[in-house]
Length: 141
Image 1 (cartoon, rainbow, N blue to C red):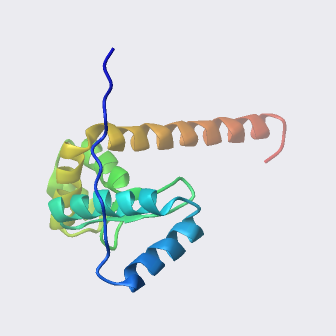
Image 2: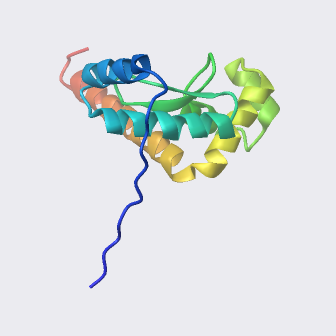
C-alpha cells in the first residue's frame, strides 16, 4: 500500500490587513480562506505566465478571459473556426492581435480546460435551440 502526501505550504501575510481581507473575501465567496488563497496563487501564476489573461466570475463559473474582452474559450472557438488565423480572429472579434495571441498561448497550456468550456457552451446552445423548436412546434412562439 502506498500513500501520496500532498506538499504543504505555510503562508504568513506581512500584515494583518491581508489576512483580514482574505477572510472577508472567502466569507463572501462561501469558501475556506485556504482554498481562496490557493485559487489566487494558481490564477496569479497563470496571469504571470500569460500576460493579457485575467480571471472573472459569472453564472457559468470562474473562467479565464482576455483583458477587456471575451472569455478565452470564445476567442479560441473563433480562432479554430478561422483555421488558426490570428489576424482573422482579431478582426472578427475586434480585438488587438496580441490578445488573440495571449488566448492562444493560454489554450496551448490549458487545452482540456478550454475545450470543455467550448463543448459545454455548444451543448447549452444545442439544448436552447431544441427547446425553441419544441415550443414553436406546439405554437408557443
